[in-house]
Length: 81
Length: 207
Length: 251
Image (cartoon, rainbow over all chains, first blue to last red):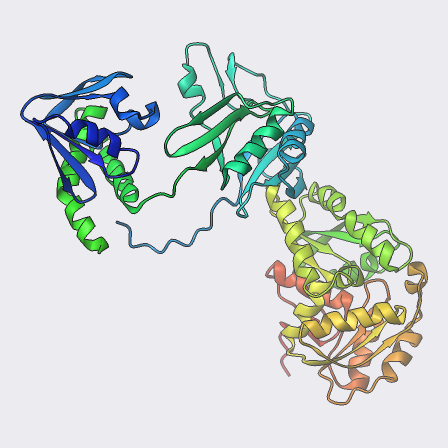
């Protein structure tokens, strides 16, 4: 299972929204954090989010038994460890 | 979280040496318009003899002050090939590290940032870099001493959840550096544990 | 005997501080003193000259601190008081900051501050003064002491403008002025509220005559120096203030 957390602040919501478009991904809240989970790897396309680099590269707040295997200007890919 | 009373009141002064007091005054007082707030003329009377010196201070807003020491007749040999007059580095030290230490001064509005940009651009020390992202906008330059200076504005106020997040990051970092795997991945994993432990209760406490 | 180095910052035309302070402190039963001074240019006790004198303070502090004194007395009274209420604290603070910034261990006191300290040490609330100044300047000294919550019962201004002349005012004239004061209910008499007007030999006789404690800027300065060095205040022949710690001889 792939699971990550993102803080609920205005800059991150476009990223969460793009992640949520994938039917395999579920998004719910733990306190002020979005919990983003799936049974498969999660891929988020940066261009679809429209967000800038500084926010993109600091958007992940936590990982649960997962790792980020791609994190560049095009996309973020999170897989289970 | 800390139960200690928090009664400190910001930066009384942050001090740096200079070998160019005229340039330093030109930059901070004349270009940026920071008033000269204070000065002390003294000699080295303590156990370690040192030269006569002037310690002078600029007001950087909020009653905070930026101070410089100018020592008469003293200039150490400048080692290394990069850095500022205080910290010098050889070529093998990467720029990200050399630039890590810097002073960032806050302004409230876009108009203020634009005005300070204008002042710098009309001087010998124009803005070298302007960065904006969703939460902040900053301009950067080096002062006559090579000190890296940033002027920045927040594009939105900090939210309470960001304070929580900052505290979780710091707690996770302190835990991770004590452990076997000191890495960003380890930090994000530890932080997730802390989120699970604390975030829901935090939110409930906010109501 | 332990030697204590006393730094003095004096107005340039002043001769009394460097005469009376050593005379007083050399009477100390258990401590030795050496005196080292630096000068601030001043001839006329006018507001303009006093202001320019204060500007020399930084230079004087630099010079005297080089001698590593144990305590520095900023021996100005009216020059400080014209700066307005609380000025002695500001001046002492600025000098202390300058000393501290350079790592000097010297303590700083001022004659103006010493006068206030000495009057408080003897619990004097209602006081009288003799000053050599022109009336407007004397009134500023009175106002300063009132801002320190002393009640000024009566005061005299001998109106001698030239500082060199002030240093030569005969004791008889000072005593005459003191006798003309209404000392009803007065707790203490400041027989010379000036660091230049000599008064050392007048103090004990005046205490005898008026029956109340008598001090001068000089005796207050000596008191403050001794307290700053935690030395016993036991100086004979210069008034009760300086005998505070004197153990009476067994009968």
